[in-house]
Length: 280
Image (tube, rainbow, N blue to C red; front, top):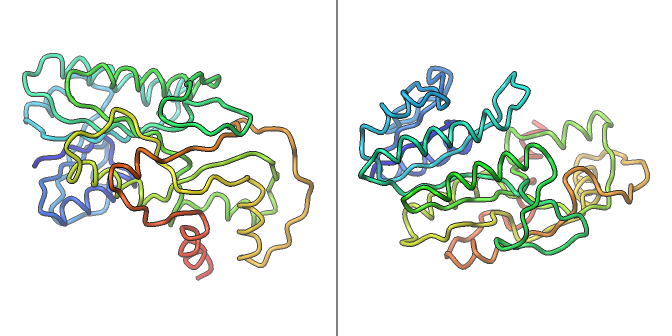
């Protein structure tokens, strides 16, 4: 099985390590392969995903699977449009000229949802984003969904893990605004693990999955727990106003029904090793 990873950041690197460990053929694509870690069994190539010609060259090979993990374009006023929508349009054009259609997994975000009242949501809930980023994410999803081959869109909640220390830095800097809003998250190892699970264990994956752990939690409760673990005194009132990311509780029934078992079922399990690394 040959897998192409379009976009080679942290999640793609974790996927690549798992697949190569199963003796799968893996190729990762990014602008600067020389800046990425060298992994045994993983071939890295340089390409600009905003170049249709370079994508066309990549698809001279008949890939079995394509995993797409895009990021906002740096230094662009419409960074989400340039980073997500434009590459997907180019990919659509390239694949429209191919007889062979690979299986595609596209990593998106729960940013396509705009619920603000703590509603429980699933893959069929209304997607009516109000932010420019959410609108661009949903537009990119629609392009992927229209591709001729099998596609699965993974709407990931807030991704965290080793090296993703934004919340810990905010706490140590005393730069925290406590909110009474529901939040959802998923450990980076579970994002990568679920992608590999779909590629290797699931014959007919669903078109859309919500990817988050078992426990939606109020934002202020996460900060309070983290502060306790770090021995930090956390002061300040809890703001009842909903923040820019809304307030919703994400289900993960589709993920569970696929047979995947979470490595970290909640934020406390997932943050424990992150905190240990932070305190070294």
